[in-house]
Length: 210
Image (cartoon, rainbow, N blue to C red; front, side, top):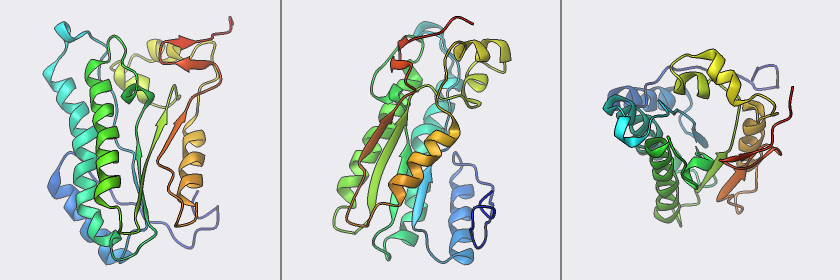
């Protein structure tokens, strides 16, 4: 798709953001392949389970913090040396409305996304003066594999999450990423909160009967 849109070349490299060795190997590959990084989008993450705290599972909690928060720290740490010599670059972290407003059954996920938001704000301060920009894009309801993963592969329950609603798509979020990344170097989009028109809050969604 990148090539179809006019990119001169496109490369894919598999990485596990929960493993430092894998992240460092990616940074080495990026340096050898491109020599620099101008845009870093920290998009890896997900939700696991909808249980209340008293019924929560350690492995679900750990998986969410490993990918949603610690993954951002690992990747950013590894890639920053490839960005700092070239002012004007941007780091965009993909957060969630859940990082702003908590809801039942989402304690660990909401906390991990609140951590992402804090990491973004801290990075913005730490990198001030380097010419690098840092921002967060926080989507609301978006129809991806998110609900399938969260609901342990139950496709019927996942489909019900979006029933009667036209949610955001991955393409909608991608357009926001491209727009933010293409602002002039003196413009930093600190944060974007985006929801589908039918969603007014995590717990307020207008559904049309089918």
